[in-house]
Image (cartoon, rainbow, N blue to C red):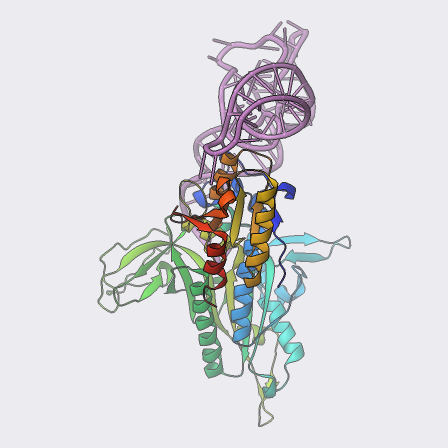
Length: 435
RNA sequence: CGGGCUGUGGCGCAGUUUGGUAGCGUGCUUCGUUCGGGACGAAGAGGUCGCAAGUUCAAAUCUUGUCAGCCCGACCA
């Protein structure tokens, strides 16, 4: 494969030396400073080139795993007419958290906070017979929710990228199968992304339906509280009751009524955690199909109502969460799975030999599909080292004085370790690895 | 929506109490020196002091209104 490296000398990026005062969490501060994102308005963000690279990688992993369970990609508009949401009652139910607007003819529109209505209508149009089931449709779309208080950068924005998929089945057993497929696909996704996660029982909220679970990662900046027990049971506090039937939250005040060591229904002591919700899967059941009077024919030519599931995963939130989880005092630390580049090449000195060598390294290692960010800027080497640490590409190749001996330095961002290698050693290390 | 706070060159901030020629750091431009760990010197560019109205000889500073943003709380991928 061919791969064009990115040269920082012609790259429209500017790292910031100081922390912008508006950024409230460390991950967000580094995403700003390292040039991954910029705020455009409260909870609304511009993705810069590095941020785009990471988003693309997240999307690729998500697409691969959803298509592996039979998902087919579509793309609905973000701008939708009011009517489908009136049918389900959600035009009112979402209330102020939904962006509503009018066109020049004064017709009502909305910026979609979620797409259950549209997927149901598409299913109704496409699926008429039991032979059309089961099915999984998904999209990666920008969602809009006018949150009361956006915070922590992309962790909770008013505009955010989400993958949402929807399963269509004929009965509850089929729905269970589709649900389990998604549950497993999500586990694969999180394993590939490199997140520790906990699957937590949840309530369904505005989506409706019955069974519902959330995927959390533990983080001090998390906005949600969930509980776990030694045997692996975990629950969102909203869906939790103690051994003696007490709710975890006062329904009126919202006050947390439980503490570490309280007993769960199974008699085990609980532990409370702060977490970031990265995904939420629901068994919607027939709520939406019923709202549109959608029925299909079974083998006996009887009309039956399909049953659906809805499965969301926050793409832009994953980017932000990774930054919150993986950084040190110098900057971000990307995993190989999500890093915007596989290697950053620092030209610590500037001469023709260095330029030729970086070109040669790219040519050799690109054979294995590795991608490169080359810092060829005409600035002092110190700035390049600092920026490399801020950006957080997992491996940096330093081209400097050792180039005379055909040697380079290979720096690991996460450990800070430095290896001195000949070019041949570099090539064999990465061309042979895993092949 | 309730409580707290902030809007001053790209970014970080001082100046507001006590009205009197808009400042510092960083970044940016140019030249020279330097150049493997955020170099040094010199010369520059860049600001409707969020916006509007008012008070005043005079407003970044005082008054009123308004907009935006941030933090804490109630809702959410």
